[in-house]
Image (cartoon, rainbow, N blue to C red; front, side, top):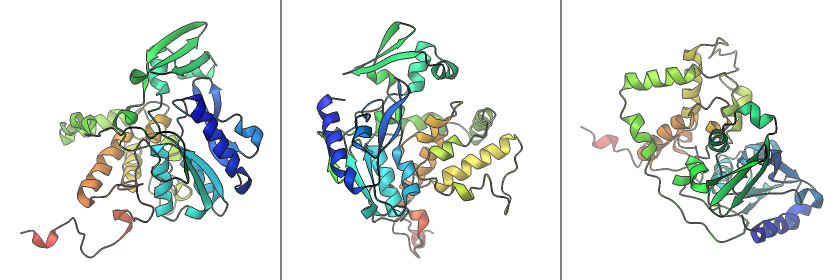
Length: 325
């Protein structure tokens, strides 16, 4: 990201800082390759702010925790859609959040870079990454004194190559020139849809065998807001056992995806947070697309809209049930 946009974002944060409890942004993470959420409360905190291709986390996940208090948040396109959806569901009040938006050309996929360099999770945690920089269309990473450079498009998160909303869809302040949207043809679902039902079930059985039930996918999701009453921990009714069974793990993922039908904004945090690399985002894309086709609705675009599965209409305008024979 250009220094002038970084400077303008910092200035925008400083401007609203006196009027809010804090501003949610990104700062340095555990190593130069990874950023981390930054909760800015003072001008000194703002100096640690960073955005751009290494700022991956969807900060909207923290907004419900600030209910009743006014905060600011810096968002790229997918983050802003999550904020919009939270507002539309009255989980966040519009007047209680100041939104600073900026254009996003994509973010890096740390897992892709780590795999290309030959680093495992334990290597990342050991602090072996000494330097990471995005220079135009390349990404350079230094490990053990050796620098490797990759084309940005090769290490960009998959969600970014199909992002239709790279600019903040709702904002009080927008910094920078708007980025160009990309098309989403759902080509990634073609291979999955070509499978028979039996093949799909075997695919998910194999994937769920690797699940460690850490619930990172749930905790990272900005719209999975009922985690205090989650079916994974409920004992009355007792939906799931604590057994390490493929069936229970698959059951949880199906419930998670169904709860997000028509609400998911495609931020990809569920899959990114998974420590064993299960493509849990595939569930959401498949079900969310079906909800969109059935109801003609996309979540996270209109703060006044109500998701189709959160309302009841005697006659759905897109379902011509009375015309069926």
